[in-house]
Length: 368
Image (cartoon, rainbow, N blue to C red; front, side):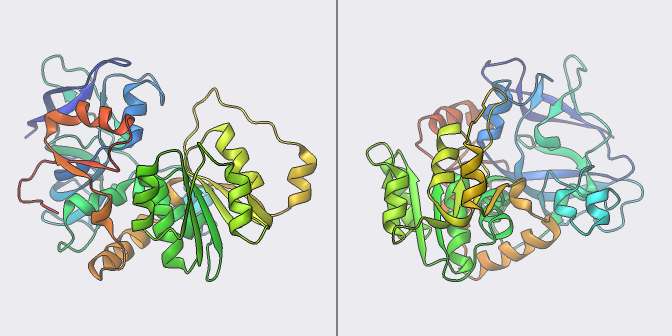
């Protein structure tokens, strides 16, 4: 029968989030109910609260989560109660033109649960963030949004692969195709940018330049393998990156901010025939103007990275294995663990640049 549980909801644009009672239906065909053990506080959740994604309020926030499957619906054959999973927001369909071409990481018809979770007091339907909604004790998702991983990985760390860490790592490894000996610059060293740095290092980059306006973030970037740091508040990042790469520019430059000014910095700080990867998410009002001759004359590739162009079934287990081997420091992204009723304060800390990730812990045994 349906469950009534506690969850974090944004009722209207800019309003403080609330912990309320939410009704979670039994899973229908192709669906699963997952008991959430831990969920990271991502900047995308703040975008939802601020109306920066759409205006389908009320939102059930949270999406960087790991937990245990409690129940599955009819037709689900590759998932069972008790499975330990990371939730993903790109459950590939296997049938669209991208999937048919063998590029499922570009799937144009990803799956979400058909049924809706609702507010217990009014029955109003909730819009789950990125089709997940995981600041909640239990959530309803499509079974394809559940990726099974090794239980030895702490949910506090593992859940971060559900969005920001995967987006950054994949921007370097999957989209940017960073390879041995490359020079890489990453503009913006929050959670996504730091993950891009870690990914570039694992891929074999020998020069990894971290760019930010906050010395605290730059210091943190060194932990993930940055070989050089540039404070772009005080120094022209284009000139600094060129100087650090023999006057040429970096082979791959990753914009983890997503603003016109940072994209231009990325564009002009790459080497000829180099690659720019946009993984920071711009707002709908942002525009950019570049001389077309410069776009032509510099060659190379200008790419955007959706979720790190990841395939969860391939990438999540691989990254968990690297984590268990001590080669990928997921724990390093966790600044603090918090309770469900501390999400609003976590947004404030995020906005102030005080944290890489606050992680909501719903299962008290789910320690780092």
